[in-house]
Length: 109
Image (tube, rainbow, N blue to C red; front, side, top):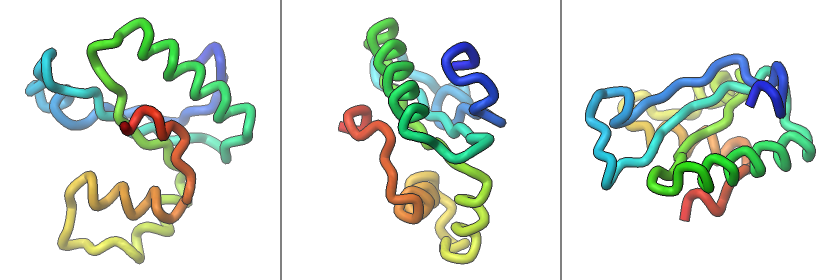
């Protein structure tokens, strides 16, 4: 990532089973949250898709399941998210609904 898109990410975090030491090599996917340092361009999206395709080809057993967020995604979500529901799926579906962009629809199938 650093070679293809230098300075693109300001943070990258693993969560879910891999972060909780509950990863199952036969069943688990790899959950991540990546924070972008700037707004995505069309070229960035193309590069990210190629990076994901390369990773999927190298490691076909484990699907990547993640979100790419900007700081303002979290700010806009703060007021609209129901604080009683703290599940990752509910939280990030709100954020993704706000952005309207799914960078990798083929990776969610």
